[in-house]
View 1 (cartoon, rainbow, N blue to C red):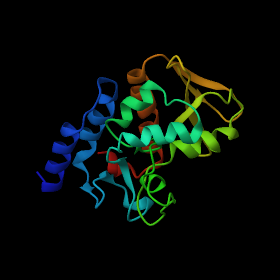
View 2: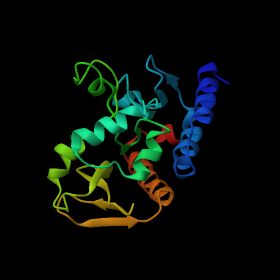
View 3: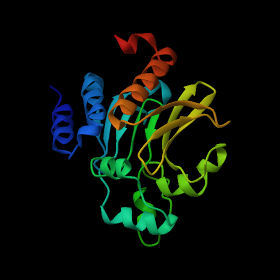
Length: 208
């Protein structure tokens, strides 16, 4: 086995994955058969997709954030971070799996000064999602926006969660595509949908 793959497997199993987040680890293991590596910031880069660009990978799992950043985010947005979101932040600082994406705590936004650093690979920012991105959806604006995926090559959907940890998948027009009370079932379903869309768009030989 490639030494990089061995290190990634060790990292996947050393991360404190909560039971709810195991689908992320399981799918990541599956795609390790393709070229994978760990970058300078300890992010896991799995399943190279060079037809999308030299730095494109099917799966990116960002190194866990500092737990103190959660409190900083809550002060920034004047709201609590839902428990299910806090659970995955203890395992990973967001991730992307094909078009599926969980937002995280963008590291450079928690430095001094707090700035967006575009010279390094970082997760999409939970704070910015609450302050700006969710305004693009015709929904209850009190919902917490924590991710999204491609619904089709031309349209994305957003992930939202309420104080009771009920999860909603919304189109921008406010149509609810699906809802769930289980974070694990939500992950399995949405990652599967993202893989199906990427398989349709990607080079056929890559999937064999």
